[in-house]
Image 1 (cartoon, rainbow, N blue to C red):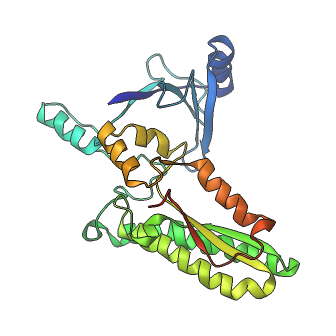
Image 2 (cartoon, helix red, strand yellow):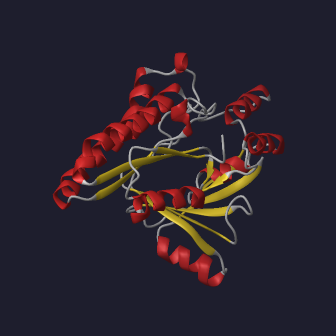
Length: 268
């Protein structure tokens, strides 16, 4: 377990960022907006997780000041099993005011991404297929007329090794969605080749991106070692590994490549 960040609410986000960067010498690590829930987040620090803890500044749109003591938000702790941690708190006589699970406005599609099939609700199933498979269809549907008119185009879809049934950390709904993307890619390539459109996909394994990396580094050392040892190349994938294959498939070097889903997994 370790400290991830401390959250503070601010009334003037830019002024707060200037203070931490210009006066205290921190770096603005990342920034995001959530229009649905009307807030902006800015993460600052002297290094990113997992090297050092960060400060999270939360600006709630339209709120310009807070009463003394109400600007403090929370301290975020990273742990391998938050559900078990809540049970330990209860067993020790503590009070859990909010059960473990994704926050409103968060990026998790369902509460338990690794849920087995019997634990998936129809709503969970539909949410994962809609976000992954339907989203891919909608994007493709929007760009195809343009590509057909210009008689050229490159589409590179994002599948996953989970779509081959090889991910223990993903649900059957996610596997079905990503497997559907691979099948959709092949069918689309057969349809659109006559228009000069190449359609391919990549299927990553666990990749230490800005979002996934900090979570992976929170795992116990023995679990991280097991992940590495399962990979023939004996290391975890990086975003740059995926980007290189994406760039190849989108380039003129791949003009005679279509209908493929390329595993970018280190050999899994």
